[in-house]
Image 1 (cartoon, rainbow, N blue to C red):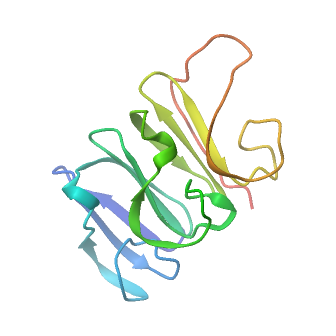
Image 2 (tube, rainbow, N blue to C red; image 1 turned 45 degrees about the horizontal axis):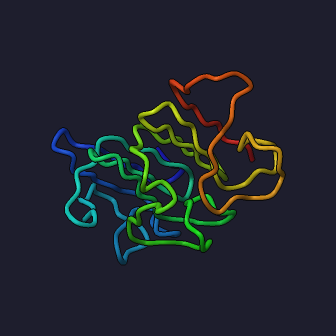
Length: 161
């Protein structure tokens, strides 16, 4: 759930949204506020298996393992080469060779887990939250490396102001 919007995943894989759409976080064209849940039209009619949201953006993993993001894109938090807001679900091309199984949304960054145990992060790195030795934002996903040869099993993202 985002700060002022909600994403609801139906058992059919259909995604519904309601709340504020000020940064395009509902993934629908038009309307600043949506008071009742409305369905999102995902590209190519894909079905969603997992959804996450932060204050001004939303992310959805499809049953095929593709990751789509939309909404407020400051600091590269949407994972696309060009920062900026997106009002329609857009696939993250930097993870197209991976099968994503889970995504987590922080206030200014995002992380994903793939089916091979790989962990990925992007967005703001101001507090080291990307897990890489760089304090600059990453517009696209960067794979996290562990001190030992291990696979990631879960991914949990907090909100750092």
